[in-house]
Length: 161
Image (cartoon, rainbow, N blue to C red; front, top):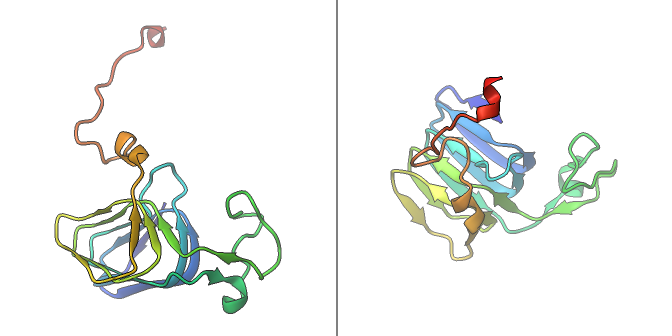
């Protein structure tokens, strides 16, 4: 989980692979563009949490290492268990995990979204190519802090010893 204080500036996330949750604070706007391969590191964790408006301007074109000149799956950050030292792989343009904002959300991108888009404000869909899939697993096992009624805590008898 990475926290970014944007100090009132716009934040643009594009042409990258992210393995984690980004918490963006104090941004004027958060834009996600071009090709992005994004997976949160925890089960059912959000990909992006922000207190600013979010704009999805992603492409459904694959993220190519050769185009950006960077190896995106080194041994320290394997992609789905696979790593190498080349810069010739490609990754699907997708955002896996919920997108959460306290501001408005504009969906004008084409990358596949795997997770709900949550905001108390408005969600505007302008994309004609958008594909959103939400697994029932995220409903049955919501991310930490997203329980409507937290499960009741119980004392386990053997824990008193």
